[in-house]
Length: 302
Image (spheres, rainbow, N blue to C red):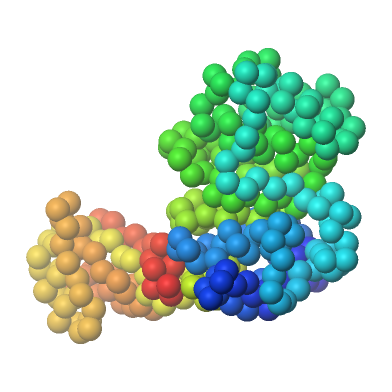
């Protein structure tokens, strides 16, 4: 059974003066997705997200969310969405909890103390609930920003570059939080990012846009399985191995890195034959890794 489609954008176009920032974008986000929204800087990601949130109007095209046209049902749709666009802003001299209380008051959200503390626990900030936000690291502010988006228990969460500027631990914390929101809380997420390794780790579906147009949309695993794969091979005789492989697999470039590993971009169907050839010539195969890289795929198609 096909998953419910929470968001359907068709034919989105947006000009800024003579510049066409978005050129006929179509995307579909299904319930339960962690949907990666990928593209180089200037590709139209942020403009598309702003149209999906009705922050700017498209010149043409349509957005349907939860089965309702966005233009005619803006308030009803936005009440079911949580979004963090660019960096979150807070009253820095107030505590995390007080910031959430004020946001609830300004937004008309009926959230009691227990509910806000539960959200702070979810994002890993319960022990800093009463600390002034000015004392928070950048990663903690990002997690508090996500806490803001959760106050009204949205069905769909949209995050624009959520790991920008984070250190490795902050990136891991954000990754774990996104996965928890999806698996434990049943949230559907759209994540705009240019950090491809993170999208490879968390997203199940993705769209890649370039110069305002969709290049490809689909399942992350299926897309990265297409084409050639990166092979890293460790053998008992690297030099003999390269000579043998170069002779038997013309058109494939085999090289030796500083760790004495053999590297090559290979067709997936050739991996078994490569291993068999080396064993037949009494060369010990100590390690053979084949990697499907989202980064390689992204760079190839853009």
